[in-house]
Length: 459
Ligand SMILES: Cc1cc2nc3c(=O)[nH]c(=O)nc-3n(C[C@H](O)[C@H](O)[C@H](O)COP(=O)(O)OP(=O)(O)OC[C@H]3O[C@@H](n4cnc5c(N)ncnc54)[C@H](O)[C@@H]3O)c2cc1C
Image (cartoon, rainbow, N blue to C red; front, side, top):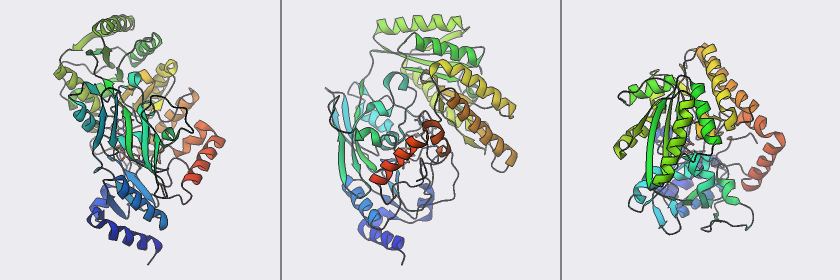
């Protein structure tokens, strides 16, 4: 029996029916969204306590079995692909909200709680958790990819909202990082080492997060522009005027057309469109709206439409959140590269204009959607895997977009992470010495390289 088989036998003996080597189960845990791979984990463990995770990781460490933490499986860059086989540890059963501290605006929860489930728990508290990736991701997965969403322009990304973590280290120890205090100067900041580590340094089993008061006033609006450039210039000016917008999202004509069709939006036009939301007191919201309307008019905005009721707001933002699937529906059966560049806000209009021009040159009419208040946008590149010329063109466009963002002092990934697809760009973005420093940390914390191996950078 190989070491790996002995290890799997040991896991099966300890975990009984929480261990599965069923082919469908392994297939479901073999990748996330939008990344094709043949690799499958050898087994899946469904675990629901920190102690169980620690025991499992301890056994995997003893037998040098790779471990891939699994949240909700919505990551987009091949993060979950078990390149060296191993065991997928599924944390969906870790779904308990453990504390809601209304006075201090913080919560403690298990890593498998999803963002929607957390907001459901907070429903009657007058508080909410604002970060909203388009998918209903787990909070452990969101911390691990340093995720954000439409509200990040106002409330920050996972980097800003995680106060502390419980982590199972690669040898099966359990450590606590951070705490409830709003600031601390006590030692190395381990919390932020694990935020964005993509499961390569340990498994997050519990998180302490900031939550926020539901604003007195929330108003959403949509307005169209003649060109994407006009819409982007409007966003840049609003940001430079420091308007504290809660959300400002751009959809190009192709994406807007797709959303109208997919979400059955009535009376909208397939043109470059900004979706906006304003949070605050009535006076502050009125002031923000007045300023933004006047800036938008400068750039030729065509009519503001206001969503006044909760139902209207939900309809708009649901359509926005389904933009990825609306874009996919344009080319039935096609795969997509979602892309995720982010640039300094002053370079946003240039970056979008050059990206769209390159897409057209390569024969693509791509949906574009962006959290443009942060300088972050996604060009959804569709391709049919059996059309080799198109596959190559899609890869060329994706590569070109990253080069463009880096040349504009941006990043290859604003929020999705590196996973497998962006590994080649890490040295380009940070330099060889910085990536070597990351490798030193990885080797020190995970000397057997069992935690989600083969991701972020090559060891
Ligand atoms: C339609 C759609 C829209 C999206 N929109 C956005 C968006 O607006 N913003 C954004 O940031 N992302 C977006 N994403 C990407 C995705 O939702 C995020 O990357 C999310 O954070 C992944 O969370 P998850 O729970 O699905 O993690 P998974 O996909 O399960 O895992 C992601 C990575 O984290 C690791 N991991 C998971 N849980 C843990 C844990 N507890 N401890 C340690 N490591 C762990 C995994 O090993 C893997 O490397 C979108 C995806 C889709 C499909």
